[in-house]
Amino acid sequence: MSEQQPLISHLTELRNRLVKVILAVLVVFIAAVGFSNQIYHWIALPLIESLPESTSMIATGVATPFLTPFKLTMVMSIFAAMPYALYHVWAFIAPALYQHERKLIAPLIASSSLLFYGGIAFAYYVVFPLAFPFFVGAAPEGVTVSTDINSYLDFVLKLFFAFGLAFEIPIATVLLVWTGITTPAKLAEKRRFVIVGVFVVGMLLTPPDVISQVLLAVPMWLLFELGVLLSRFYYKPEDDDTEPEE
Image (tube, rainbow, N blue to C red; front, side):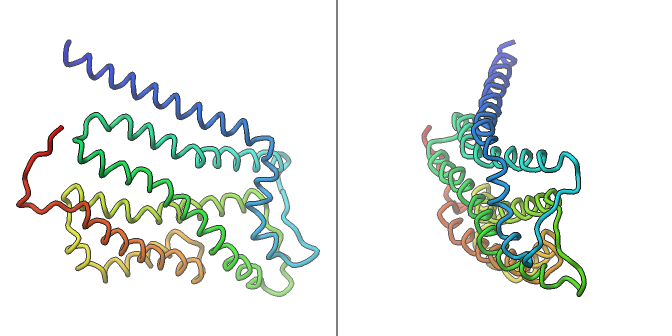
């Protein structure tokens, strides 16, 4: 019974933290839902500015003009609440860590949000202004580009997730070294395989155009190099087996 009690208390704490995160997402959503159309217009601006004159985006479904901005606002609310969610992840696992582990993992959790937001910003401010004019200009003669607003949102969200996750590479690299799975030296030795791999991933995660693929692959490679550099601060040689004080 004594062993079951800590498990129950941990599950209760986990449930309470999940409820708080869900409530935070709902609060952000309620505050932003009144601006759904403005948020969608801002997201769609890179494509709108690339469309030829006298053309515009279209809505092919009856409820699409309402549901699409609504869906975007919900997704953006989840993105906005991510730092708060990661804080609860940190608060939940922190008691099980040693003091020096807390000092190491806290910056990782904080920087993961910044890197994810950085990936989204890179996609919006760098990739979209380059990719959308290319897409519009590649249309065959006689074809008018009028993108459906729901199709555009699905496309944009896929790129946001792709670039957001790709920018987490330094975090993944540091964790691989910190957990002892590999070392900075071994990662550096596999650099040529990583370069090939990021271009393959860029080809799979982005639309079938060279611009988007290169704009995802090159930052992934640079972020890998950054992760290798930062992982040296988290690397503990095998001969250092001293146990930290709690």
